[in-house]
Every structure is written in C-alpha cells, then in structure tokens.
Image (cartoon, rainbow, N blue to C red; front, side, top):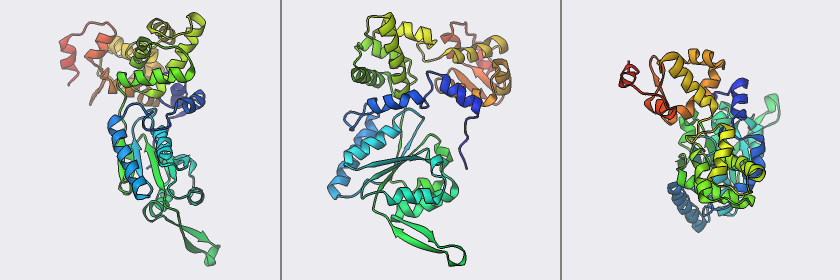
Amino acid sequence: MAAKKLNPDAAAAEVDRVLAPLLHADDERFDRLFRPKTLDDFVGQEKHKHNLRVFVEAAKKRGEPLDHILLCGPPGLGKTTLAYVLGAEMGVNVTVTSGPAVEHKGSLSSLFTRLQRGDVLFIDEIHRLSAVVEESLYPAIEDFRIDVMMGDGAFAESVPIDLKPFTLVAATTRTGLLTKPLQERFGVTLRLDFYPVEDLTRIVLRSARLLGVPCDEAGATALAERSRGTPRVANRLLRRARDFAEIEGSGGIDRAIVDIACERLEVDRAGLDEMDRRLLRTLIDHYDGGPVGVETIAAALAEPRDTVEDVYEPYLLQQGFLGRTPRGRVATRRAYEHLGLPWAESRGQKSLF
C-alpha cells in the first residue's frame, strides 16, 4: 500500500509555514551545521539513546555490524540525524537514500554492492518502497544476499550475489503503512517522541552557539515553547529570531526579541500560527464549536480538504485543541480558553453526541 502523498495545494501550504516539520530547501545546509556527531551530542530521546549506546558497544565488542534498526515518528524529530550518529559511533560510512528514490530492484542492487562491511544504509520513508523492491530487500537484510537476473529472454537466469554484512537503518512517518513481514525483519524498533520544552531549550542553546549568536536561556525557552516539540522547527525559529535580533535588536536573542519575532511571524505561545487560529475561530464563531464536517470547514476556509486534514489538523488534534467525533470536528475547551472565549459546560456535553 502506497503512502498518501500531499496534493500540490497541501504541499505548498506545508512549505509556506514556518512551523512545518517537513524539511524546507533552506533547512538543508543548516541541518548539516546543527547535526550532532555522537550520541553524547544528541539532545533528547534519553531512553532510546541509552539503549542505542548499549547496542553500539555490544556490536563493536563482538566485531559485528549493528542489528537492523527501524526509526518511527513524525518528521523533524531526528531520524536521519540518528542514522548518521550511529554510523559515526560504529566508525563506518553511511549511505542515504529514500523509498521513492529506489524505483526498481536494480537501484537497490547498486546500493548494496557499494556497501563495505558494517556500513549503514539509511532508507528514509521506507513505507514508500514498491512491493517488488520491498520483496527483493528481504534476502538482502536477512541473508546478506541478492538475486540478480543475468541474460535476456529464455537465457535469463537468477544469479545469487553475496553481500558484505551491513546495517539497515530505516525511517518512517507512517508506521501503519509498513507491511508486517518488513517490520519483523528489524531487530530494533524505536519510536521517537516529541521533545519536551527542556530538551528543546538545550537544542536551541547549542544551535545558537554553532551559529555564533548570543542567546540567553529565557530566549531559548521562549523559542522552545513555540516549536511544537520538534527540533527542526526550533532551529528554524532560531534563525528567524536571529534575523530580528540583528536588525531590530542588539544582536543577541532574549525573550523580548523572541516575542517580537514570533508576533511578526504570527506564532503564539502555544505554537499556533494564524491558520491554526483561523480554523478554530471558524469552527467556534460560525458553527458554535461543532460538530461540523471537514468538507464544510474546508469550504469555509477556502482550502482543499486534503490541506485541512494533512497540514492544519494534526497538531491541533495532538495538542487537544480539536476533537473528532462521528458527526465531525469539535473545538475543545482548550481551544476556547486559548482564544480567550467563554466556555459553557453545555458545549462539552453537546460535542459528545
């Protein structure tokens, strides 16, 4: 089953948002700058870090490659970074590709034959591999062997080729789209969680040092609170705050300059932007808080349904500003309180039916 792709309108809306967790074109060079090199430098995900450190030390002690690892979770949480960190910790090379880029078995075979013993092959969005490519992946990660077709027509024959033992590190944002046979072939499965404000504050302070911009803890915390639990968003907001600090401030980032920058970017203290608030206000002002169907919401916002479902709703649902019922979407008590609107208990009772 193929992953659902954002339609062009939804993709454009996602790229336009400063709070989008997806990688923007201008993020790439900064991601390389901010990317930690070791597990000690990697901030957050402490439980997974401790386990990975054990796996790495055990594999090095035995002189074996790491077991295959599946990293799950929303975009922007550090799955690609962890793949590079694991390669550095093991002292091996990391080859990076993605599910959509591996179009046929030949592409996969080409990747495998370039790997040296112990190397890490990182496949991002592995759920988007085609069924044919996925099936050819099984013997490679299980027996370190691939079958290559030699010859044409009646003279064609399958020739097995042995591979050097390697580690597959795969990432997915859609665990439910992975087939059971593929999931079972990973020895370790880690689900990355959204980061608490404390960890994001440490990430912002570290990134500010790498950028060479002064940033106090209050300013870093203010950025962390608005970052939706996502390091990529935190680093993007840091770069925007740096711009305001250099032009409209003294060059350093503190809470005051963060407030100015985020007010201009229309990002509030809960990490909601103007479109998030517009959706909630439409639901409350026009439809008495709901329930109302997503098609109606999309029409009221003049946005495609896919954009509402794939871009705007996920964070509102995750943070409890929005609820889904059999009859449609409802604004929760938290949404009313965040927008400074009165909440009546009768609304909460009505939304259940």
